Length: 254
Image 1 (cartoon, rainbow, N blue to C red):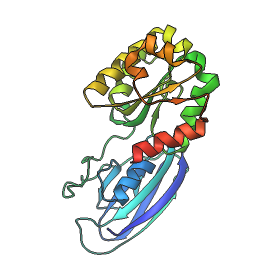
Image 2 (image 1 turned 180 degrees about the horizontal axis):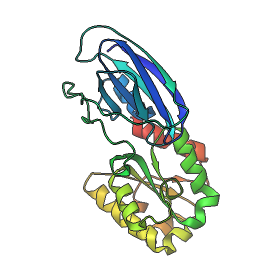
Image 3 (image 1 turned 60 degrees about the vertical axis):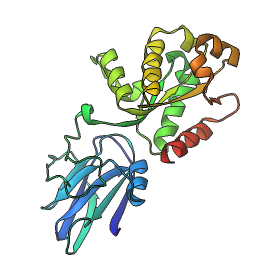
């Protein structure tokens, strides 16, 4: 499939990119790293955008990370030229006709991309707050640098948010439940609540459970949760944050 590719690089949530078209109507898709790889290889993918019949088109970055824009004529005819630029300040976001004629697409609508209810995540990080400084904050940033969409409380929670609702929403919209068992994790109430949700979704096949052991022995993990101990895990004593992030990224892309 022929398409024009623009790599935006690292972008912050809320930034906007303007796509200008000349000639034919075209499909305009804003995608993160993992979805762009799926798109490029003809696999199912998620995107922000749609069939653009007028120009310019303004698209908002839904979450911080590495982003790409693709312009193609899949399902269409004619010729089109395109260009992009990052907008210096927020502008109104348009809505367009969905790409209903393309069977390979997962997302059919041009969504309200500022609505958190529509967001999807690659990884949900379940951890104890005591482990943020040691490992969790650095790991969350490393996963984002890999181009993954990460649900991490410091990225997602704002003053006044319902903690339970935010956690439930993040769990329900994440492909991987990344659990970081540690002595502090075992003692916490919220971590057990999150773990119950992840295990339930793992049993039903809706989510992948990945444990990252931190300052804890296998015996302690077995006594706490045999279902976690049975999973192939990484240990922060033997692997760097970058190695763990790369491994998770490769797993999701494969």
